[in-house]
Length: 561
Image (cartoon, rainbow, N blue to C red; front, side, top):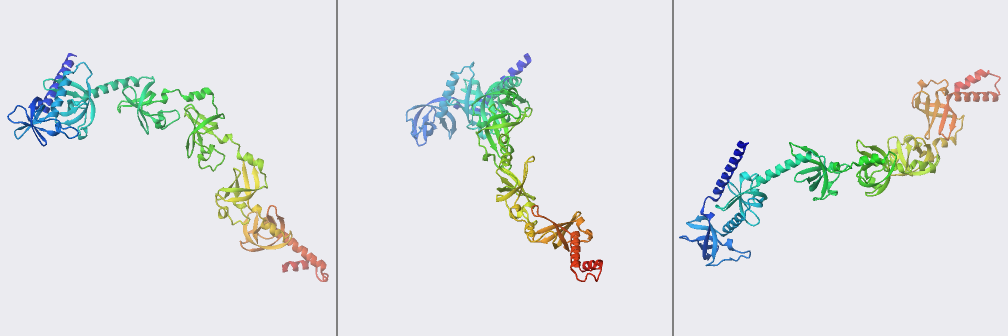
């Protein structure tokens, strides 16, 4: 231990000897370290000649004794204190300002108390090879060796102000040595001890906000600065600190981490407060409960709602309204608005609470089924047009207008004649109460081609058409005027379906007409029966029926057709 003390004492002694050497070098052991009493003997322009008891007068710049209005404040014969700062052409160069500073330094040394803290605030005025010339607000001059500055040398240091500790006064040389390094080292030591203490503590500490940034706040906890990240401010989640605090505010914090390598102290405000999620459990809130909340923030995808105890719930855009085409939550709610919502999810582990506004609103379908029924003709607005048809909104409920229900012309698609936003009149053709689906039709408002066709044709009529399509169950025949008819496979009679060709003309008898369901069925088998009846009728009416057999007549008639 004694050896260590000796080393410290020797180090300190060497340090002070270095300071003295630097100081001596700074002042170059010149005469200017002494204040001379002089007398003004002449004033010539910018030069004032002073008798300093030498063989030749010294020269003083007039600017050193000129007031703010530009007036020289001395006259010939006045006594004046000066310091010799150099020599030019054998004539001493004088400085009144340095003499004043030396007087101030002498006064400072005279009143110096070694037992006091002796911390001064100085501004760097100039620098030399050994260190920095500094002055305080009273214009007292100090010397700070570079080794005691704890500064990276740079021209930008001139004019900067720092706190420093007086480490030596030299009455003989009228000089004062100061050290910023002493203060920096002490601050680091105190900060290290403080951090070691608080980083192991679970106690709540009061800190002062020093700086607010976009990512959090720097908080002073008794000499050490720690960062409160914006995610550690509130149990609501990440928040904008500038909306909640001001620099200088006092806040309770807890230490949550200290990075020894990076010297980063992490603090938390929310960790210093009671956990509101525990209150949720204690209050017994459950899914399905209705609560009153305030809309705190609205985003394009939904809104955050404040429960009033530092807990936020999330109201997704899909839970705001039964309207599936909602584009912007602001069309339905506003910030700071108080609303009733239903809790639809509580996850205390993930600190997540979701709510619904639409669950407390009457379902549009419930209103719809009270007001409308199948067969009603209504007006609606086209909301979307997928490939298979269009969705039409009627009193807040969407119904489907399928492509096959847009027109009796099968070639027409919804997208060909309608666009989003169009108002359209449709007929309700089905309501699925369980699936909450509505089927609509536009073509039902028009007379069907089959209804028109039925005005001029009856069951049993023989008609001709073009084979449009073949299926396993039969053949579709185009009768013209937008009318399609079906010949079922069993009604083809002796005709082989495989031998029929698309676009081939075919003849058959009308077997069935349903104007309500817009269906027509044809039958070749019936056609044969109709022809048989015609033959029999002709036989019965023929005067020559005794000249040929019944079989021959039928054969002849059939061959003619």
